[in-house]
Image (cartoon, rainbow, N blue to C red; front, side):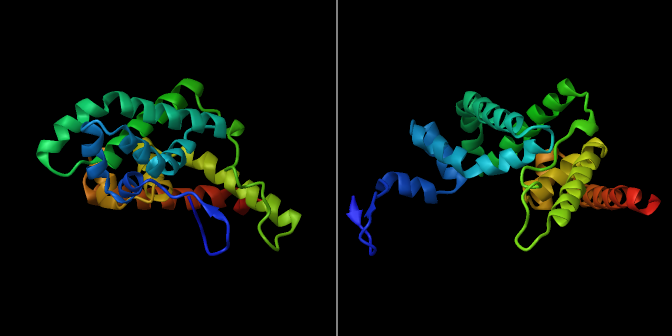
Length: 211
């Protein structure tokens, strides 16, 4: 423990933990396979926000998304040693793509089991009720309503379009990574994304035009 420039106590991160934090996913997979449990903890910390944002599209409540996130990592942990051992001799380890597939499968099963999706009950995104700086109450309500409608329409997209949109927007994945994750071509991923965006724009604007 040392003092920083401000005089406050700063807890120094153990050197090995710091090295793991800076290591790529492939090195972490190798370290975990070699018996270093902390390596998997780092993988969880690194990818938790990604997994949560992906499954949130399929869950009506933040609590459900949190449970799905935990379930995805538990599922990954249970299979990790067997899967990592198969990856290592072949070269680069596609940990993120593998994790995303686990999360998406759990999320889709959850949505299927709870549905049978009743979009009218879907909540707005977690931050929709928070007013932006300089925003009036009316503007906040309008933004919240817009977010709710977008969320509803995303749930109604064809399965492949919804998956690609979720990975691209929430997961911030490149089309190449999306293609690898879903087992489709990169061009197909781009087409599905643009179709999803086009459909969303048309569907969300539709009620306003009818008024």
